[in-house]
Amino acid sequence: MRELVQLGVEVHVALPPEGSLIPRYKAEGVVVHPLQLGLPVRELWRIPKVAREMRSLIAYVGPDIIHSHFLETTLTARLALGKSHRVPRIFQVPGPQHLEHAFFRRAELLTAGRSDYWVGSSEWTRNRYLKSGISGDRLFLSYYGTDLDKFMYHKKGKLRKLLGTDTNTKLVGMVAYIYRPRLYFGQIRGRKGHEDLIEAMSMVSEKIPNSRCVFVGGAWNNAFSYEKRVRAYAKKRLGDRAIFLGTRDDVPELYPDFDVAVHPSHSENVGGTVESLLLAVPTIATNVGGHPDLVRHGETGWLVPPKNPARLAETISTALQNPVPLRQMASRGQLLARQLFDVKTTAQQVFEIYSTILSETRSSGDR
Image (cartoon, helix red, strand yellow):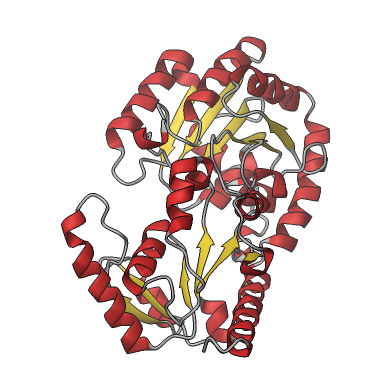
């Protein structure tokens, strides 16, 4: 949003009143509307009120384009405004999870109309919409950008000092929040794959006794009971070889001490692979969603099948015992990550998407 403002876009954002980012948005020239506009699927009686608030906001702002980054807010806009509303609506899809399940995928598509467009934030997402019958002229691709300045060089040592370990200890790192399983998606474990890495590391530790697994990231959305389950499972399988640091705000300073970063997700966009490769940390990821956009097997990192602890363990062991090839891949991955995920580049892409959509709708007489 900051970059779009600098490109001359008048940006309005609606977000929950308790949002901690409100002061930062305002400081960057974004107009903030404190509203909770996500579709209240667990409080259906509130839908009419939320729909009215959506319509009132659109009438007040008079936007040229409505841009949503969440499925819940996208559905609110579609249901509140109808399929034929004159303002183009963009759903920049943050992740593939709802698209991986036929019921939820079809439900989302059924709410769309002639005013709707999609921006995939990975090739997998864009291709899934194409397979579902969405025409290419309504589909775009733009990754979620990041400030490259936050991922400049950081010297090693902070994490090892924190843990009290020397350089002989092999550190395998996973940076991810702990999400509770979603039963309606058929999940019995969280989608980030913590348990898979725990099981894999129990095998790795038999071959490499001086290995440790560091988990950075706490419970997401109050999933504290599930976090306790994950920690207990790690204690059972790994003992003191599993170290949980909880949620931290100094992640870029910790990454350099990882011998290898692992992203064992079951469902994912591009995820944390961006962070690890921006810092040139050797990276292993599951072959799901947007991971292959950045982790190109044998070129910028290694890909493994999801939900396969044995293959993951084999790959981690190889990486720890033969570090040079993976470090070389990580250097190439860093160059690719800086090319694809620079927020200035991705904001320019979004700006061009806006221009393309507005040009098409105006020439067709929709506006």
